Length: 147
Image (tube, rainbow, N blue to C red):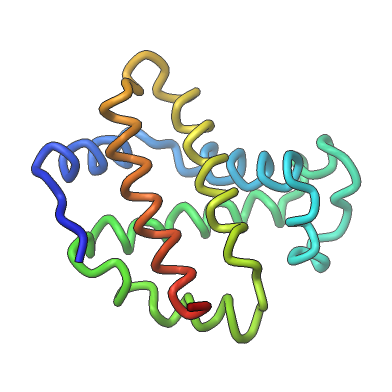
């Protein structure tokens, strides 16, 4: 079980309260697909992903980015049992979708970059530390089924 300080809980909730889900989710997923093109193999049904413009303009990428970001709300609401919260999703991604678990880390890194850009100077090293701890726990939970 992960131990969360009051500062971490408050900071993570504050980040999500300031996040524009309609912008951040699509931007983070698009960045991941552009920077790490091998991740595109899981999105074959999304149509044209041939270049950065096609990816950023793809409505299916945008929709899935929003879905992923809203999925993090579950972790936010269940910070004391993130692993349990994502157990079913871990099974889905490992056994049905066969997603390489390292892709969760790549997406988390891209999300951190997008959030940092959105928050600007408010994204201090302490804020980043809390946010990345949260994302590490989520990534570990999603990859749990693989172990």
